[in-house]
Length: 168
Image (cartoon, rainbow, N blue to C red; front, side, top):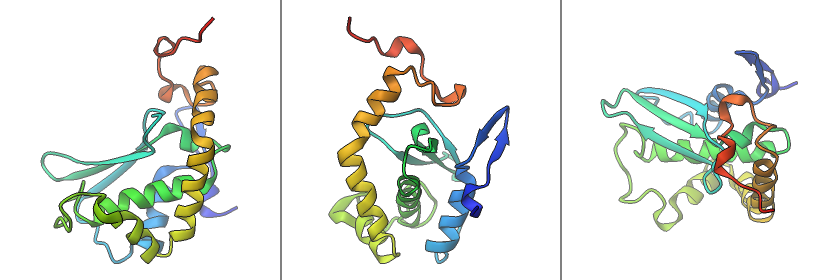
């Protein structure tokens, strides 16, 4: 069992894919040259349909928050999706988006800067696998989880059932 697969129990829920452990391992392995200039927190958020992650900087610049789509903690999702998503957000951090670091570009995704950065850091194949899986399977997977009432997710990540009505 690798460090990334060690189960963490919190509030009666076992999370195998602990995002903090992934963040630390990815930062150490691929982003060791990027200084951690403020507190960086990471957590699973809602099961968004069209977003895998986000990064935000607090108004006082003390904390950067990385939010990860709650569905990425499920075993049915390939691990490389979670790895790529966290690395994507760390790229934004390194480029000065969602962090106090100097902003290197005018726009966070202009001219494929994230893709080029992930390739430069040795994550190109991981990113390509992620993109292929998302293109071919994400929406069907999302719809299946939503239609099941989000039952595979820990309770704190489940949207209210009233957000989706199954046609009769």
